[in-house]
Length: 244
Length: 133
Image (tube, rainbow over all chains, first blue to last red; front, side, top):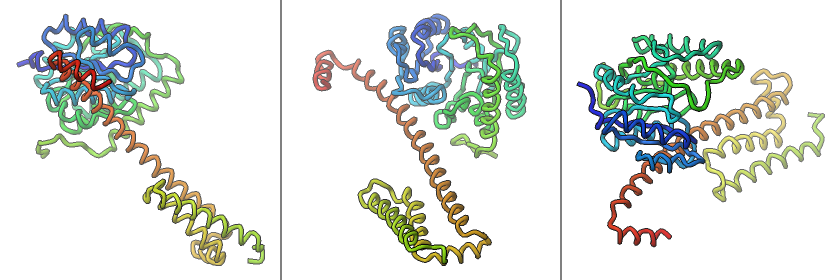
């Protein structure tokens, strides 16, 4: 049985997204009737909060910028306090199609985390050079850790079921790349099952990811560092569960 | 210690006394917490002992096998600075984490307040508007 939309909270971390956030919220409500939508305004300096409120979303406004990790942890806490079972993260820039949420929710039947992946066949999205190597390395290591084939570990399009929610409300990392790489490491080491679902992505409103080789190399370095530290940190257990 | 002139002897003692005086005065005025001051206190005391009794430095250098005693001074100074820096970085990390948690809680509580206010009857709403002004 799939989780009903009424028990699902869509979380949109938004930093200076007044241009797109209203449209994304509207699209969420149109394509997913009955769902609750929380926009976490991550210390924006524009009218992100006002636009999101006007579009009918619930809005949490952070007093200053915390990054995607901090914004998402706010979302997870809100979900826990307000009795939601599932949190689905959607980017406020409109690159994720809310129609894909249904597939993610269906995948949660036998998983704790469902990742909407770019490279799993649908949509066209190409990267090259160090950025691509970084993604290949990440995919390999995380796939082995999660005992499933993951190709797009850094996707922000994710659904987290009740067990993952419990874990993330307290332990969602807020460092750079923590919300993607380390979150998956924490979850799989705590025993969460992870699945990947193919979704198509739209071109980002803010342009393509950088192809500057130095920036890409820096990204590769930081990603590997983030992964290495995530792996050597103490394991976090799920509360209220016996780990045999 | 023939190379040690009387002026540099006094200069060494004065410098370590001033260091200690500053740290202790800041502790006394609660401008510095003990756990942050501990390394500075240790450094000041060591400096005082070595400047009053230079022979202790020579003895300590012999014990650990350092040929030039001043090198031991540099080594210990750098070690203490290193410890202080590490401690500060750790404290900063902790503070950042606490600030982040507070920011998240503030955002969620603001939501609850706004929600609660929107459910008040109109008369009470103008009341709360007036009291907040």
